Every structure is written in C-alpha cells, then in structure tokens.
Image (cartoon, rainbow, N blue to C red; front, side, top):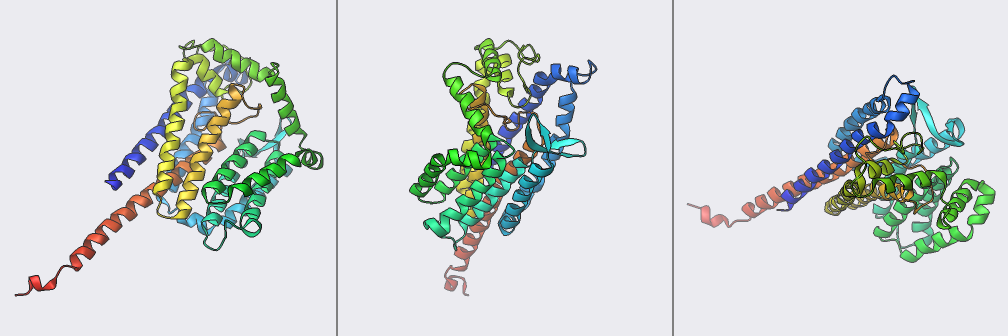
Amino acid sequence: MVKSNIKEIDILFLFSVLSLVSIGIVMVYSSSSFYALEVTKLKSTSIFLKRQLFPLVIGFFLFFIAAVSNYSLLKKFAKVFLILGFCMLIFVLIWGKEINGAKRWIVIMGRTFMPVDFARLFLFIYLASALSSKVRKKEDFLHGFLPLFGITMAYISLILLQPNFSSALSVLLVSCLLLFVAGVKTKHILICLLLILLFLPLLVKVLHFHYVVRRISLFVDLLKGNPPYQIQQSLIGIGSGGFWGVGLGAGREKLLFLPMPYSDFIFAIIAEELGFLKATPIFGIFLFLFLLGVKISRNARDEFGKLLGFALTVNIFVMALLHIGIVIGVLPTSGLPLPFVSFGGSSLLANFIAVGILVNISMKSRKELNEGYYSSGWNRRASLPRNRYRS
C-alpha cells in the first residue's frame, strides 16, 4: 500500500512539472513575440522560444541523470559543492557580465548563465548534509547553529553584492526553514535574524548594499500609493485581464510597456491574457507540487534525504511565491523568474536538477520498501518451525 502511494506521488509530481513546462513554452512565446520582432528587426516572433528550447532539452537530460543517480553521493561531496558555490559567486562579481548595473551573469558560448541558480542548490546540499550529521550538535548555538548560519549569510552577502535582492531573500527564507525543521532551536534563528535587522544600516554602509536600501525605499513608495513603473504596468495588465482574460496572445503590456514580460513579469502576462480564472490554477499547480515534494521528503529513508528534499521543494515554492508577490506589488521589485515557466536557461536547468533529485529520493524510498518487504518475508519463512517438514 505504501509502495503504491509513493509511486502515485511520483506520477503526479512529474505530471505537475510537465504541466508547468508546457505552460512555460506557450507563455514564453506569447509574452516575447513582440520583443522578438524588435530584436530580429521584424524577421521572427519566436527567437526567444527557440533560445528556450536548448536549455529545455539539456534540462530533461540533467533531470534524468539526477533521477537515476544515488542522491546519497551528494552528501559525500557536500563540502566540495559548498566551495564550488562560493567560487561561482566570487567569479561572477569579478568577471561577470554587467547588465543594467548588476553583475549576475557569466557568458558561456554566447549564452548568459546565472551562477546563483546553482550556488543556492550547492548551499542547500551542504546544509542538509551538515544538519543530518550525527557529529554536529544542532542545539548547540556556538558550535552547531552559528557556523551554518554564518556560511549562509556569507552566501547571501555575495548575492547581494551582485546585486540580487530577490535571490538573497529566497536563500535566507529557505535556509531558515531548513534549519527550523532540522531541529535547530527557534530562538537561535530569531536572535540572528534580529541582529541582522539591528545591524542592517552598518552592513549597508560597510558593504555598500545601497541597492537594498533603494529597493526598500521603492517598496515604501509602493505602500504609499506611488508604485514604480514596472509595478504600475504589471498591475494594469492584471487589471485588464480581469476574470476571463483578454485572450492568449492579445495582451498589450508585452508591447514594450512592461519590461521583461517573458521572465521577471511573466505571471502578469499570464493574468492579463488568461485572466484570474486560469492564472489561479497555475499557482495551484505550484502548491500541489509543494505538497507532493513535502510528502516525498517525509517518505525519505534517511535524514539527509528528508532535509534535502524539503529544501529543494521549498526553494521552488518560495521562488514562485516571491515572483507572484513582486508581480502583484506586495514585495519589493526585483528580478526573479517563475520556476519552469519564465524564460531563462540557468534557472530552468537548476530546477530540473532539483526535481530529478526529488524523484531519486522517492525512487530510493520505494526500492528500500521493496527490499524491506521481501527481506521481512524471507525472515518469516526462515523462522517457521522446522519439525513440521521432517519426514
């Protein structure tokens, strides 16, 4: 019974991911068609869609590799992943490509690549490994919690230096939730978060995090009824869509009114063209995916699998929440793609790897259940009274 339930979760989980990918293909084309005409000088409306197909194919390949590999190997190389993540974040600050005042991208073979999408995965692998270790005392503030929180804040500081507020916020939220479910004392987490808030002005001055102050000030203006241009256009699009939507491909905000309609604000185009009636179920798919991911992590046969599965699941859901929150104007404006839906290669690849690991955790659980069942059956047969079979 348990085995069939886990198999059912796998099927529903994969179906949810494929549904989001399918929606993404349609909406990337719809939201980018006018921009594509401008880029190609009226020659093509599908240039962005074609660019998305390559990482999509690679993503399916990486998903397969992650799904059939043994996720336990990740624990053995957790420290290597952590160091690699640090190197990637430092590399992009020094040699990264600057776009609109931000250094978030590395150019590889003519394609832009965001290291933060993979660095966050590496951090979660390390945290899950460290928290599942019997050696580390999670209740110990000085030797257990503080080093892990310090590593997390070092990652976040490097991300803020790019600057990338939304990614830094998502890493902080997921890491704190992971520490919480792993058994770290809540007061330790709250104390550190409070200290960050108290020393935030000093951090801004020393580390030159003026970008953070600017984003917060724009958010304050939004609360006062003076939203920035992107949010104005996003809300206009959502309002225009109403309940039924203006029709697929008929949206106006993508006509150079709304910046980055195919990535950072793709949910606004979804709401405008498909309306509240169809945009809400898309969020429902993310919620369903989250619940299935939590079930997969709970069914994991070891502590590392439970924690890693939880972190990867929450990461996808938090990114979706933040994206939608930014689009509807309840969070500070900052570029963050909608998982599996927005245009963007590195985000798509990282998320495919994440769901591949989750499927591997689930497959491993089912395999061990099978082995346990047959093993227990053999033991029962072996323990039968032998005198019944004597002639």
